[in-house]
Length: 184
Image (cartoon, rainbow, N blue to C red; front, side, top):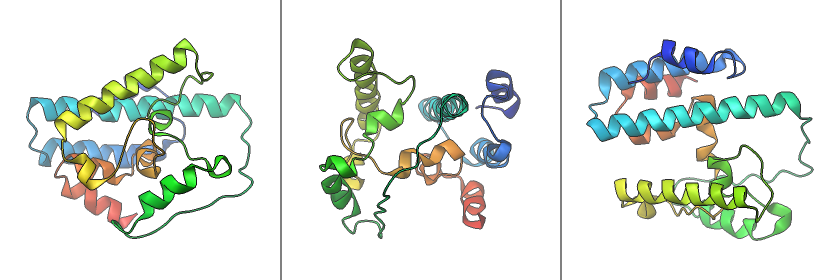
C-alpha cells in the first residue's frame, strides 16, 4: 500500500496547500489496517489514489500559471440518491449554456488539448480503456449510477482531489476514514 513518505518523495510540494495531508494520512492508515484487499484491490486503490494526486498536482501547476475565470452563472443540482438528479444533470448538460464536464474531461483534464486532435483522441481512448476495466471489475456499476466516458459527470470524480471523498469508501471497508469524513 502507499505510504505518506513515498507520496512526498514522488510529488514533493507540487500538491498545493497542505490541506490534503491529514485526510490522506487517515485514508492510508485506514486502508492499511481495515481494508482486507486482495492483490487486485490493492493495485486498484493504489492506482486511483496516485491518479487523483497526479491530477491535483496538475491542477495546482495549472492554477499557478493561469488566471481563473469566475463562472457567470452557477446552477447546482442537489437531491437525495436515486431521486433523478443524474437524469436532470444530463438533461441540463445538453444545453451548451449549462455544459457540464464530461467523465473523460474530469478523469484526464491535463494537459489541455484541442478537440479532434490526436492528443484529444488519445485522452478519450485512454479514459474509455479505464472505463472498460472499471466495468469489468464492477459490472453492476450501471445499476448504481449511469456513467460513460462521454457523458456529463457529477462532482463525485472531483472530490477525490481534496482527498475527502466518499469514493474511497465505495472502494473499501474503511470505517475510520468514514468517521473522519463525518466529522468534517
